[in-house]
Length: 295
Image (cartoon, rainbow, N blue to C red; front, side):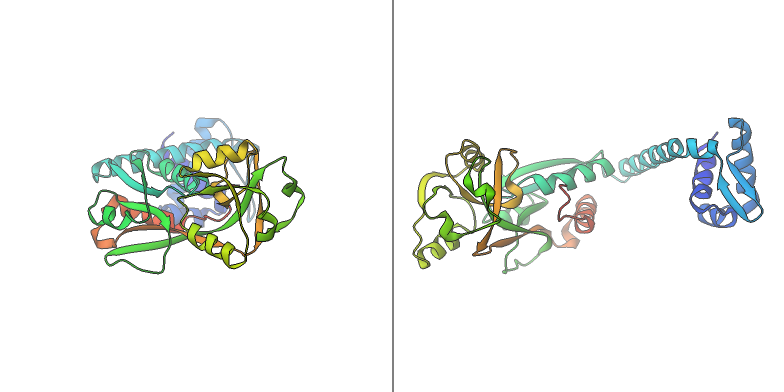
């Protein structure tokens, strides 16, 4: 048994047509037929049953199809790994992450990327939105998960990834659990946990002032880890990005008035100044299905 026989069988199992399978695998139909027969002789039974124009897998063919698919994926991984090594792609990517971006959706993508490129090491750096451009231009980082803005820096590309709502977070035992949505007035009399590093904080506080809403701030913190733990302990409510909530004891509801959203993006130097490895990372990030992928 060799990998070509497995490849021919999988093409035939997918198309159930010898002519089409031969075209897909770039061999003659007679060569494919002979390879399948040799495989059947080695396994001791028919894999393909032909009844006139109808072609179907036998029970033996059905039972081994999944195993052959696994072997073929392993072969592809070995080939791609060897190619990456020979092309100099065995390296690392330095990725900046703005501290207010939750790990839920980016981690799904990073897991997929590592599976496809096991030889590439991803180094995550905690950065601020204001320092991002300088870090990219100095090549201290290769790319960055950040908050999309209106102003575009020269020589820096931006790929919008997903939109994220700002929601009201609280402990599961809070009375807000029974509500569908909340308004800013609902929050006025509740103990409030203020996160000092959120980029929307000034806008949010200005809106509260405009609406004559005085928040009852009982805690202020710079680290999101502290904010989440205070929420978990039931010590107050807070306005947070939806995908930053990672604790099962913290619930949230949408804020209907005002409705606040932000866009998460991936920035990098323009394409001509990026390494091949970074270009692959950017391409796969752009093609990844982001919204709702944490489910």
